[in-house]
Length: 270
Image (tube, rainbow, N blue to C red; front, side, top):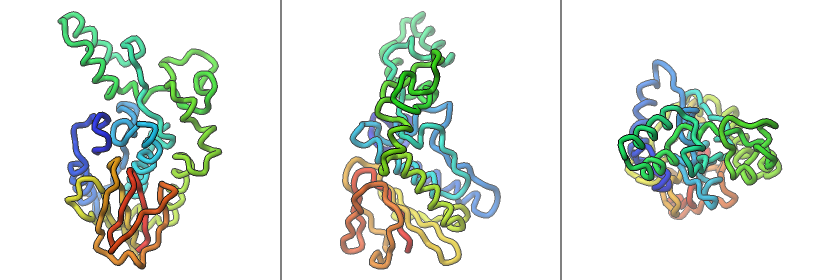
């Protein structure tokens, strides 16, 4: 999904992902079941890949992406650390990587006099090692993960991104994620099993959709941009109840148009 340009390593736009996820939902609406995820041990970090890991936007884009995962039909999977907004590793040397495939390709380029600088830049963004750094429990040595020597280097930003800090902050990614889990439980029929309908399909920056079941209808609006963006959901927003926002400021609604701050995610009950 298209967030910050340098972070979008999969080569797809938000429009591509809207089509993809909508197609999957349609295919499994009556038969089968979905797994919904944006990260795993073989991928770069979710926020670095699909959001914006700049400190100014990391928290907002992390919680926005988690809102997407937790409001789609199917079984959501959150890869460990993505609930905190853990980012790509920030490795600057090939010696810091451990993935055999990555190291073998680097060796091949050495032997064939390939562009090592270009390859290093590529793997800094896309290597699976980005998702394999130790979990960040606190700001102590090795992020509280081990008293020994970890197999792969701990991300230097563990002093700012860790469980201990986020548990104390009511506005943290972790505590927002807990709210998402509770909301999904409270609206299990709609959010787990309910009908999915894409809203404003051609909006290049905002992914919006409704989930509904047995009279319970929710509108989810996600801004995938670092700019203020707008959406007209074509419903009477005067009657809408804001259930959750990932930012401390609520979106501004003018003439039934929702104006969203950068990477804002909101859930309304219609």
